[in-house]
Amino acid sequence: MGPLAGVRIVELAGIGPGPVAAMLLADLGATVIRVDRKEPSGLGLPRPVQFDVALRNRKSIRVDLKDPAGIALVLDLIGKADALIEGFRPGVTERLGLGPDICLARNPKLVYGRVTGWGQDGPLAQSAGHDINYISITGVLNAIGEHGEAPVIPLNVIGDYAGGSLYLALGILAGVLEARTSGKGQVVDAAIVDGVASLMTVLVGLREAGMFSGERGTNLTDSGAPFYQVYACADDKYVSIGPIEQKFYVQLIERLGLNPADLGNQMDQRNWQRNKSIFASKFKEKTRAEWLALFEGSDACVAPVLDLKEAYEHPHIKARATYMDVAGVMQPAPAPRFSRTTLPTPVPPAESNRENASAALGDWLSDSEIAELAAVGTFS
Image 1: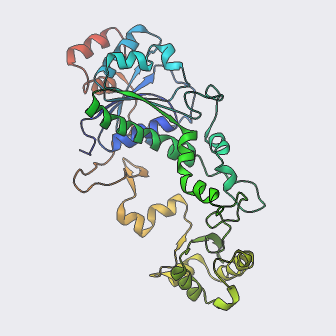
Image 2 (image 1 turned 180 degrees about the horizontal axis):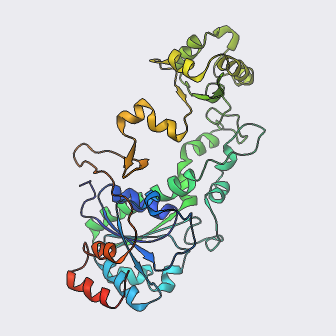
């Protein structure tokens, strides 16, 4: 069933953080209906539906949001929902007739979740952007990479999904809990720039204390330290090491066969560049498999750098079923896990068609209402 069984959410179809937030909530048991466009938007990366795994665990309908009958249907769904998810530019849903004022008038307890890159206000609110832009202006991208090199792009995970999807899902859950006490809904403005800045809280605190340099690749966890780094092995495969704590660092040095006296004080930054070269030369002496065997059972904080195919087969990942095969498509399992409300195997994404749409509406409307809407072509 999942811990969110009984929670109902309307998702106005979008790309990126909105669908992933909807997936996270649906994975945990919420009933989510996705309201898609009748015609493709041309946004995102087109692919066969079974591979668009962020659309799992929910049913969808196609509705013309420029048709008053389509808007009326969506408002009927909103009237029965706990929350709504939308990821359009500010003002778009208002122009469609689905803005917060109208939706909250229909359902005063509704939590109206909005996710954008820049937020609902501010000088950039109406500008286009992507993850790389959002993490740029918040100071995150500048902090990632090697000293003296250009910043390294960390996929679109930090902005879109960590700063966007997760904060939207958290905001919706907080809003739904509060509405159950107050009886009043509200708008959740989940701006990716705000979420990303929030993720930087610890590092910002260190920066303000003078303990985190603004110079990339000179700090403890940004590739500055030789003991928090990635090294190539003899077979050109990589291992990551991260023994920050001195007792773990001792185990690393012992199993590498190095003399601590040659390395000096672990935290003395004057030793770091020299020690990087020592570690790099040492790791080149053996293959990745040989190093992993040597570090087996230790607390030296050493792990292989795996590609996705290798990650699927890692013993720990397999033991926890962190990745799982769903109808022939590998994908991450729902997270987190619960001791009592066990999460079921995800339901694969389905094509939007009349039959599937009728099934989707079956969770919200009566058979007669669905038949009446189908007869006039309000949904497909």
